[in-house]
Image: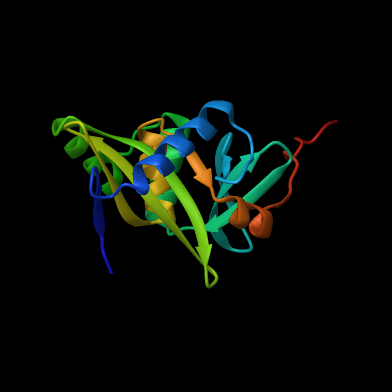
Length: 168
C-alpha cells in the first residue's frame, strides 16, 4: 500500500481529478466527483462520538475516537485545548513547511471510511492516504473543502434536520 503519492507529470491522471475536486468545492453541489460538505458537527449518537457531515437536509455520520472528536470540536467552537493535539501539531508542521491542506475526499470501502488528504507544498501537490476522521480534522483546521464521493454520499447519507431547542 502506498501511503503517499506525489502528484505531478508522471501522475497524469491524478492532477485532472484534483482540478475537478476543486471545481466541485467552489460550487458546493453534487455531481460525479462528489458532494462538498457545507457543515460539520460533533455529536453523541448511540453512546459513540460521531462527526456529522451535513449538506442541506442530509447528513452522514462517521464514528470517531474521543481525541479526534475533541480536536474537531475545539476548532468548530473556537475553543483551544490546553495542550496541542496531534492535528494541531500536524497543522503547525505543515505551516512551518509552507504547506497547506487543499481538500479531503471521503470514500467508503467495505464498510470503512477512507480519505485522500490533498496537500500542496513547494508548488507540488501530494495525496496522502488517511483515516477519514484525521482528514476531516486537518481540512477543518486549514478551512479546506471536505468532499464525499458521490457513491459514498448516496449510500451513507440520511435525511437530517437540525434538532430544535425546547420551547416553553
